[in-house]
Amino acid sequence: MNSIQLIQITPQELMQLVSNAVNEQFQELKSLLKGNSSKEEEEEYLTRREASKFLNSSLTTINQWQKQGIITHYKLGNKNFYKKSELEAKISASNTTKSNF
View (spheres, one colour):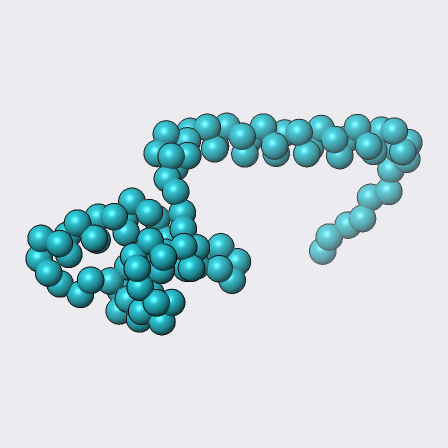
């Protein structure tokens, strides 16, 4: 069973504790992002509409290719994003094989 402990603390001390905890988490996140920054920072993500313009295709076609696994999507919340480099690779592959694109 969990126990509850009550301690006396001033509002300033509480603010300092919360501030320290937030700073620690921020520094940890910052160091994680620095470790993964080499390729990910350079990667450009396109929205569904931007991808359709880039590929000169309709939004429906983008959805169909996504469902068929022809193009890979990345979700952030309710939105789908596509890596521009992957779309470029699909275009160049389709030019050599004349496949689905």
